[in-house]
Image (cartoon, rainbow over the protein chains, first blue to last red):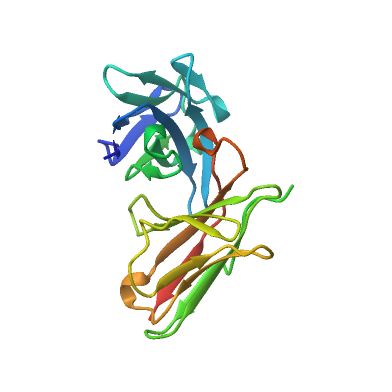
Length: 115
Length: 116
């Protein structure tokens, strides 16, 4: 069965410092991996996805993520955090060998960026 | 191009009443997904529909919950005889037709259901 783990409930970063939000996954086949961000009382906004190709994926708002097959990880990163990045971040996985349409979300990691 | 639209944004029901949640996908999108989010939790998949077809409803509770996506009009998530445990945010997402496995899902703003 496919699953996603976000081991940190919360990440605190000072503005201007690099940030990392961790994600590991488990699927039986090849994964499609996604990151979404959720602001208060809003729906999820797509940040980036990994389908195939280059392991480093660049997305919206300066975010990037690195697919590591051996560690089954897809950590979200940004070189310099902004206060406006404070939000709830969700990692998601889709197992294409299992039909491909069912997306499993992690529990979310709340990012706080302090000025 | 308008995004995914959901209405109402907030819905209050008393126990035993029915709740109807509507979702209009993005223009050109024919795949609709419904998710439920409990406070401080991630999204839980409920159902995946295409026009006039339920493709996967493995995440739907066996009773009281149903979903449809008719040929014309929005997708509807219907909860009969609501209970307090149904209180949650319900999100709809849509994606375009075709190779859906890799397609990004675009989310609506959600409907927050409160059961008194």
